[in-house]
Structures are given as C-alpha cells and as structure tokens.
Length: 158
Image 1 (cartoon, helix red, strand yellow):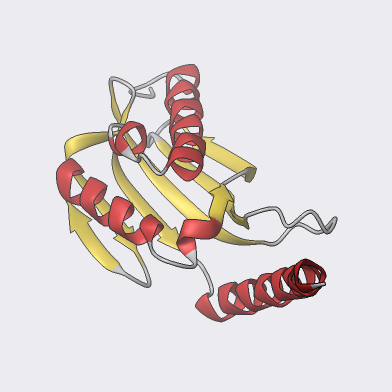
Image 2 (tube, rainbow, N blue to C red):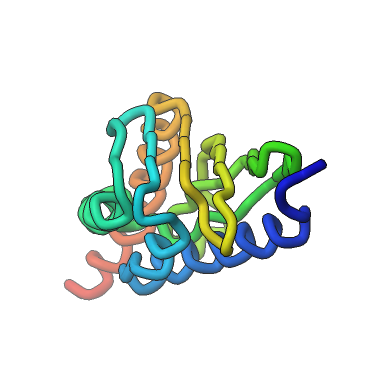
C-alpha cells in the first residue's frame, strides 16, 4: 500500500511548478526553496550536490541570477509521471528563455526526479540535461536576440 495518495503528491508537484514560475518571473526563489524539507538534497548533474533547504535556496538564487539562467523565464512541464508507491515524480521540464517576440520558443529540456516526503514537501530533487544541447539553444536565442536588437539600435541612430 502506498504511503501517500497520488492526489497529495500531485498537489505538492503543482505547488512546486507554481513556485518555479514565480521564481523565474520575480527572481525570488523563496517559495520554490520552501517546497523542500529542511534536510533535502538537491543534485544538479552539472553543478553538484547541495544539502539542506537553506543551501539549496542560496544556490538557486545565485545560479538563477547569473547569465544566461537569469533570462530563463519559465519552466513548463512537458510530461510527468508519479510513482505513488515510492512517492517519486519524474518529469520533463523545459528551461525556457525570455520571449523575444520573434514567434519562436527557445527552450531545452531537463529530466527532473523528485522524492516526496509528505506534508507537501520534497526531500530530494535531481536534474539532468545535456549541457551541449542547452548551449546550442542559448546560442540560437542569442543570435535571434542580436538580430532583433540590431535594427532597433540602427533606427535609434537615425
């Protein structure tokens, strides 16, 4: 028998998603950090492991304040699955760059694994993505951004 009901895990995941969007929009990652237990572990394959809610908060705030992450404005979920026996959530989460208004969406996925701990909190997160693919996407975004900004600069000089 499962320790938690699927609905409870799903509600915690919904809160997690809303907190990630709020963090991306406001640069205040407090709500997102508060989705974790005090003793949580966060494992980001390209940055390392972080232990404890406070350290996770410090890391995410610093990381998402640095370019190019500071231009990521949303993290939509493409799909997810819940293993209610283990209390785990598996999801493909998109790292979406700021909208340039050119009709394109610049984003790259990561796979996220969350371990639920009860009381609406997660005790573990692991994120994995291909840094090369992320770099290619950011390069495409930069090229498009420069192409959009160049005519504006030239027009302002006229």
